[in-house]
Length: 188
Image (cartoon, rainbow, N blue to C red):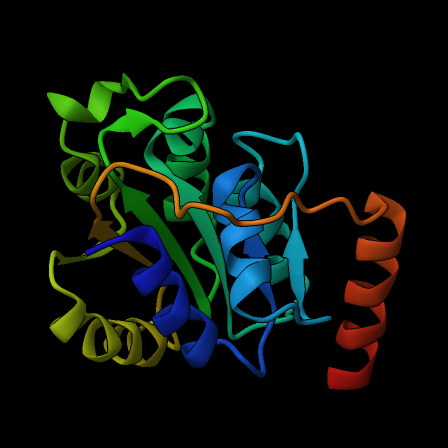
């Protein structure tokens, strides 16, 4: 499945809940699906979505999710043992794995040879996997349901490549943060 297909399903699953989104094409493509105030689009912050999502989960802002790409997770994979150790309820870490750094001329990422699902399991995180857009909505519901008891990682296999003709996300990062905080306050 293409990343845009996965993002549409994730958007539907987290339309009403906080969602932290990794930078680059993932943030742009999700914003092109529908820009939501409760989605925190990280700009130029590779490797930070999981850690920010973990912090929000520890602040009792769940249920919520964070989306990382394979390259982004590998950049900040120290978050995995932190998630396993702190065990925040209501937190789902969604990993979109296309085995390449899409923003770097599709240079292969280590996930070409290293299983991110095995890394998550090895850290002690309940882990689900999905390789089909037919199963993604079910896996997202399962992850959200299971995360009520313990954090869940959902590794989604996607095709390499970016959606063509998606506009850059040029919103002021402070405005993105302010909208997100406003949405979080409204959920309290």
